[in-house]
Image (cartoon, rainbow, N blue to C red; front, side):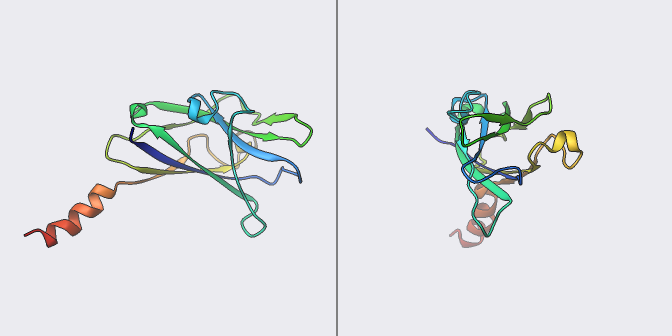
Length: 139
């Protein structure tokens, strides 16, 4: 089944060695709101405090509002959810789009006023770029 690839990125300085930053949301592909089945974000020394992950969502999710939050899983098994009441969300784009990039700003930024709740979205539509190049090469 075809679907969308969604890349999520977030900045977080609140982790310590042994912690994991995860994204958990409603769809099963995002853990079904279970922080222990969530998507693990990755970082390294060069990109810290930036973290990222990617997930493929099935095409039947088109137009659906997908809600999610970020969680720090502490080394001892405890979890720290983002503290604001509302969930982050994105609306899945219409068909034809294959990749969506979501930059969510900072972990727990809603309460601190550092970011905004709805993510900044960048949508790539490979059909629009290929149609302009294929029109000049059509026989």
